[in-house]
Length: 377
Ligand SMILES: Cc1ncc(COP(=O)(O)O)c(C=O)c1O
Image (cartoon, rainbow, N blue to C red; front, side):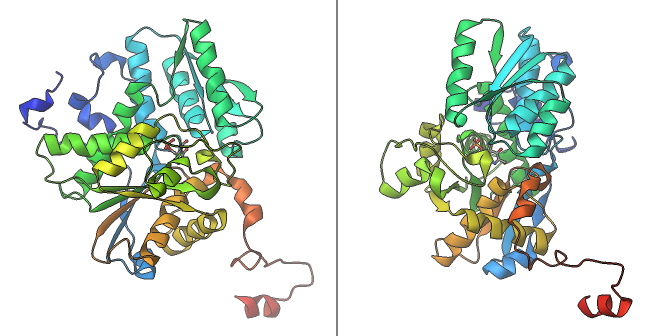
């Protein structure tokens, strides 16, 4: 049975295991038989004491979305959108993607027995994501240019063929699934809303969805407050952060966006109005980070907390570091950084590690004696 938010009465879901479908009364799928699931959601909210100490924070948490079945937060939206597609009788799904949406759609459409087409910017998708898409049997169209060009092509294709069902974050069912991120964070903190939530921003679907989730929990009186939402973008792909900094109501698209964090290499984000609204309504902000700040944050999280995330995800940590340095985050705040995708998605980072990285420069040759080896351990 669907749930009416105006009822202000919480559904009785407390005994259900934490997952996207725990909150099914707040999701737009009517027929339970249509649900296509790979056990998404229920990701860890990890208290990060060592990283927190380094940043001068007592209550720092990482919500690690890389723990989802295909290794990114996209699975939350995809399980709902593909289930809805099944309910609507769709047979052929399509998306433009910087990689993770494609990997997720390829997996869920395979499970649903649907045909899948993905459009990706040629040569700009991390290796692990290309492997996933190929493995799940999707048709891959490589588009010359960046994500924005791939997206325009996907829109054109869906206009021409009624058979094709678009699964980008413009699809409202994706956002509905992704809002469960906020539900889980609140549940994992025993219904206490964090003060601040920090997310990497590309197209802006995730931060808008999370804001929707926090708002719904407040409407239902499950939570008393909503957090401050902070979006982090890569310096050379940051139209939203720049608009926030300039105090402008519109973004100025970035041509030829560039960053090592390929997942957020987007110059013309479609969800920008919703992102600006979420940031302003929540009294939040936005910040930019450089590629080297991203790479440093990725290593900090991996070495101090054992959490390995892809570069785009590390943008949230890099952003937090910058916000702390400029005292825009208080030491006593409860902060949740959302890390959006698993580190194994992008093995190319190995080439970018400093050669002084522990464990990098040990080599055994025939003539290495145990004495020599012992000296460097
Ligand atoms: C790992 C990762 N982080 C962040 C983002 C940005 O999410 P959004 O486009 O919803 O802002 C993406 C989008 O592809 C992603 O794959």
